[in-house]
Structures are given as structure tokens and as C-alpha cells.
Amino acid sequence: MRPLVNRQRRSDLIFVFSILIPIMALFTIIRFIPIGDTIITSFFKRDMIRPGKKFVGFDNYAYLFSDPSFGKSLLNTGFIAAFSMFFSVFFGLFLAVEVNQKQMKGLKVAQTLFFLPVIVSMVPATLMWKMLFDYNVGVINYILKALGGHAIDWINNEKIVRWPIVIISVWKEMGYNMMLFYVGLKAIPRDLYESADLDGAGRWAQFRYITVPQLKPITLFVLVVSLIKFVKVFTQAIVMTSGSQSSGNIMKTVVYYIYQQGFSLHSMGRASAASVVLLIIVFLLTWLQMHLGKEK
Amino acid sequence: MSMKVKRITVVDVILLVLFFLLLVITLFPLFWMLVTSVKTPAEINQATPTIFPENWFWGNYQKIFTDQYFPRYFLNSLIVAVCVTVIAVMGSSLLGYVFAKFQFPLKNVFFYLILLTIMVPFEATVVPLYMIVRSMKAINSYWGLIFPSIISSFGIFFMRQNMESIPDSLIEAAKIDGAGNFYVYRKIILPLSTSAISVLSILLFLTEWSSYLWPLLIATKKEMFVLEIGLTLLQDEYITDYGVMMAGCFVALIPALILFLLFRRNIMEGIAMSGIKG
Image 1 (cartoon, chains in turn orange, red):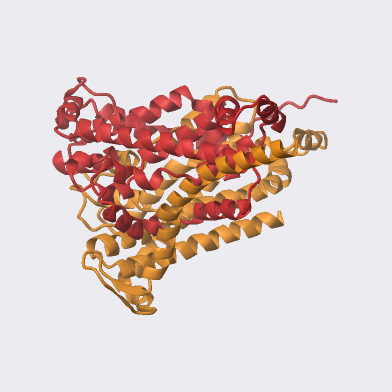
Image 2 (tube, chains in turn blue, purple):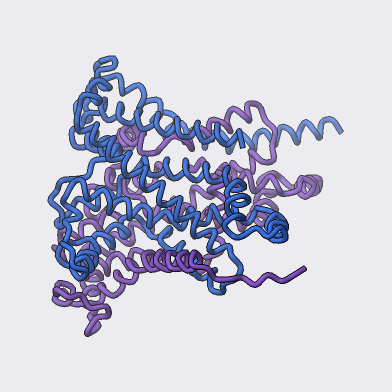
């Protein structure tokens, strides 16, 4: 029996490593080296086109935090991420609770419809909303005017354009969060509600004292996952504010800053330093999520 | 036990109104895209918008399909998304099987290394990745567009989770009959993981279909643009011609819509489950 077991073991190991090695090699090229390289390059002055690099310590970071444009990028990203997270989680929870009620027919259909924006890719989604927000022919300004208000220049005003970007983000994410909460709601034992019914607890009381505490872990999870997603906001911001309908005053976010420093200004060091800042933000959020998740 | 009659309160009405308001907000942009795509430029630009087109106008779609590059963008997106999906699903299912069913040295180290990369945002590594692809002479090539996505750490994790539930006894029985590991993978593991594989395929396809930043960097020639980039160009080529833009958007949505119509439940539950597990 022994030699057979050994032979089996050996052929298993050959199988394992003939799959593991090529895939780990790809991981090394596609993920590990770029991650390490980003961190290392952030301490160098390095040009994307001309060869050669020079160690500059924390100069790139010092530059970032003295560059008003980076400050603005952080501020815009924080604004968009915080509001998008809040509204997409709030509405997602609301929709999940409503859809989960059994009294109304057609809710399954509504659930599917709410999910539709999730599969719409970001560029078409942004262009659709951009048309709605158009100064001259947009439906939103038409409604505002019909209600007796003024037309608003949604796209070309740097402060105002954050809101359309938040709205697009919420529109895309709401249905996804609804599904996460829906799975969470389904996991709450039915008999909790039944016994509450017997005790004469109303709907609000049931929501307050059963649903909310039971959903607490998943709510924290959804909050952090959404925030991580929105911290990387790029496509909706750039598409909304570039092109012929816009003044060309592009909404800067952290990812846009990386893109601009690296690919327009060819400064790899500064782009890498900004990348490391993004990396640290996402790591802190992930750590927070794991930490909060453990407490339960 | 007394049957309690549910009373409809003011709060119920308010919540219901909010629910339908959100439904309208969710659907309106899609509806407006569809109707705008069949309106004439004159009708789109008039002061009082019409809800349904006065005459159905197909000129926008004609412009899209006869555009010098638009069909090419569509084809490029399809090639890239299909290649990424096929390669990444193959790799994920093989390595998922390896992690789920084999013991080998440093297994946990490898697994946690892969898991760790899920946390690192792709956007934070584009600069060095671009340099690597440039040194491979893969700028403006399909290979360059595909390359960063051919491995999926999430996919490996997801497949391992699913394959762990396949009973070991099935695999051992086949091995006693003299089946090799690859044979077991093909004849037992794959057929038992079809639902996980289809969910993963759809997720990867949709993600790749909507990717924007990487193609923006890699494709500088129009022949290599994907749809997401091409659509933003329509803004400049057909200045404020929303009809053409919306026709383009709708065409770009068709593959995702078809997938959604066919696999609605799988997609919704799969995405929710994968979100929670991953």
C-alpha cells in the first residue's frame, strides 16, 4: 500500500504546483510587483518618459500635502464618498425592508427593477444623468422651471456638480445594497417577529427592537464596503465634467489626481505617493470593517 | 389567538409614496434614454420636452451603426470581456480546486497572499502596471487591455468557497478507479460547480464590460478603444446630440441586459452572496 500512497501524493503535488506556479507568477507580475513598486516609487523622483530615478525621501508626500489641488481632490472624494455611502445605504435598507414585507404583490418585480442600475455600466449611467442635468434641455431644469424655480447650472459649477455625481453613485449602488440587506433580513428568524406580534408590538417597535439590532453587523459591513467603493470614485466624476457639454473644469478626485500626475504630468513619484494615500485609506477602512465585524 | 387586522396608517402611506418615488427615480433615466434615442435632434432640443417621440426616428441608431468606429468599439469590448472571463474563470476554478481539496506546503501563505491583494485597489497600482505593460510592448493591443484582469483573487476565493462543499468521497472514489487529478477536475469538480461558475462568469464579464480607467490608459488609437471610451467620444463628435449618445448608450447596455434577463435571479443572489462572502 505504501508505494501507491506515495505515488498518489507525488502526482497530487505535481498537479498542485503545475497550477499554482504559473498563476502565482501572474500574481507576482500583475499584483505583487505593482504594489511594491508603487510604495517604492513614492520615495523617488521618476519621470514616466525619461529613464532614471532619484531618491527624494518624503518629498513627494510633502508636495502632495502642500498642493492645493490634492487637498481639493481629497475633499471632493470625501464629500462624494460620504454622501453616496449614506444615501445608498439608507435607501438600500429602506427598499430591502419594504420588499421583504409579504403583504404586497409585485414586490419581487419591483426588486428586480431596483437592481437594474447595478448592471448598467458607469459611463452610460453617467451620460444618461448628464442629459437629465443638462442646463438647456435637461428634464430636471425643466421641472425646476415649471415649479417656478430657476434653472441650475449643474455641470459647470464646481460646487454644485458634486451632487449629480452623488446622485449617479447612489442610483447605481442603491439596488446592490438593497440585495445585501435583503439577504440579511431573510436570515432573521421569523419567530422573533411572531412572538413580537403576540406581545402586541407594532411595526415600528418590531423594526426598532428586532430588525435594527439583528441587522447591525450587516449594516456596518455594507457601510464600509460602500465607502471603499466610493473612495475610488473616478469614472462618474470625469465623464460628468468632461466633453463638449462641460466647461472642461474637471472634478478632481484622488484617483483622478493619480491619473493626472502619472499620465498627464508624467510624474510617477507623485502619482505613486497619491496611490499610497489611497491604499492607506482603503486599508484603514478594511481594518475597521474586520475590527467591527469581530465584535458583533 | 385573535387575528389582528392590519390598519393602514399615515406612516404606511408615506413609506409607500417614498418607495414609488424611488422606483420612478430608478427607472426614469433608463426610460428617458430609450425615448430620447428615437427622437429627432429638433424634438430633443425644443423648450418643452415631449415624453414620447412625435415621430419615431431611427436616424440616431443609423448614425451609430454606420459610424466609422462605433461597431469596432463594440467588438473590442466584446473580445476583451469574453477573453478576460474565459481565462479568469479557468484560472480561478483550477486554483480554487487546488486550495479546496489539496494539502501542500505553504498553502496558507499562498492563500493569504492572494486574499491580501483583494484589499489593494487596482487604481492605486495603475502606474507601475502601465510601465509593465508598456515594457511588454502591449500598449494598443488586446493583450494589453486584457492582461491585468486575467487573474481574479476574488474568483479564486469564491471558487474555493464553493468547491469545499463538494464531498471528498466522490473524489476518492474516482481516484481509486484510477482517475487523475485533471480528470477529476473536468468530470467531477466542474460539473458540480456550474452554478458558481456561471455566477462568477457573469460578474467578471459585467465588471470588464464596464471598465474605464485601464482602457483609457492602454488604448490611444481609435481602433483599440472599447465602448466605455467610445461613448464618451460621442459627446464631442456629435456635439450635444443627445439622441445619438443615448442610442450608443442603449446599444452598449444590450449585452448586460440580455444577461440580466436570462439570469436575473442568479445574478442578484450571486452578487449579494459574493458581496457578503468576499
